[in-house]
Image (cartoon, rainbow, N blue to C red; front, side, top):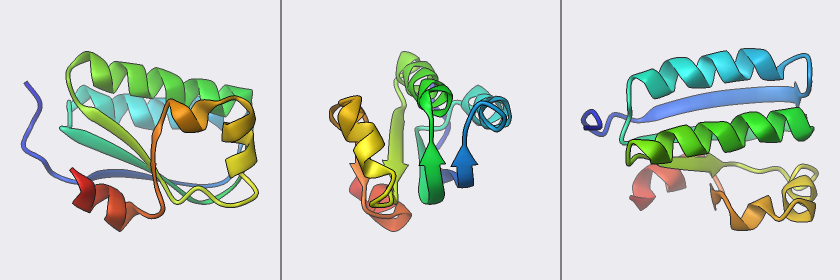
Length: 106
């Protein structure tokens, strides 16, 4: 059973690549262990994400959905959005323009 709906926001910044992805995975994992009703990943300060970063986000989404929570992305920058669109992940993830919108939406 998910915990009460306390905003759980993971702010990321810079380049999310093979070197950074393990730390992102560890942070996400720690948050997911708490089983939040919704988990928002703030990408507003992310300048680049590669396939390893996308894989971490996909795994996080699957883990959150497994217990019935909501996994949301917020603040996708214009230079990062095409990476999601090419992989068609813009159709997989629930994406909001900013964190406040994600927190207000559900």
